[in-house]
Image: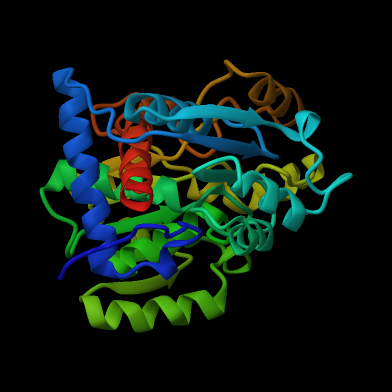
Length: 329
């Protein structure tokens, strides 16, 4: 199959076929090899704009470094330096930016906002994170898993924590598309969106993957190749939800005991940032209020040889390069 993604936006992985996602991963591996070897790969020209309504370290740096390596200029706009949704509608902002830039990245809140930008921009639009989906993260995750196991088909990934969030949803889609076995291990009240679960189960039937939901910690870890977790309160949620979320999710913290229930060669993954110690102001606040020194993962697991979290972080850059080259070339 010849893959042609020219002019396409990346809004969610549901919009891409299994073959198209594998193509992006193949491109990503190639760009990583070139970067590691110090070989120049300035294969694009023009400029992209980054629209950030939510802050980020990895997403912003990954897009900016990826664009610079490829030969693209970058303009960064945050809410204080843009009129989008304030004095100017999203549609009008998209129309203007689409005439000035070759591509637009959006990181913010509702999925409908990035989809509206894509509807009116006339150029490729990339979802750097919305409340519903986080496709660039999962591309990096899949590249990381492939590097460890030499394959994606048949790998068993279990996500522990709030399985309703954007990363969990995108992981479930990515696993279904690529034939992985996905398990969401969470309290029932924090299970993934039921309609998305059914959609992913239909996809998995065609790819050899599977989708499983459980609230049993041991069942979730048993046979897992990958143990994945995320912070317990997503960006944009009220600080008031911490107490209830801690009570619900403390049994699902990833610790050495849980890793011991998985396969002996299992790896630990996290999209970052992580509250695994007291070295951040948020973690200090949580510690002062609730007495926790670690939250979704223990420091021992986070810094262990099984942890590949910083490989994931680096791979954001390589997979974003692949998306831009595939859609802008």
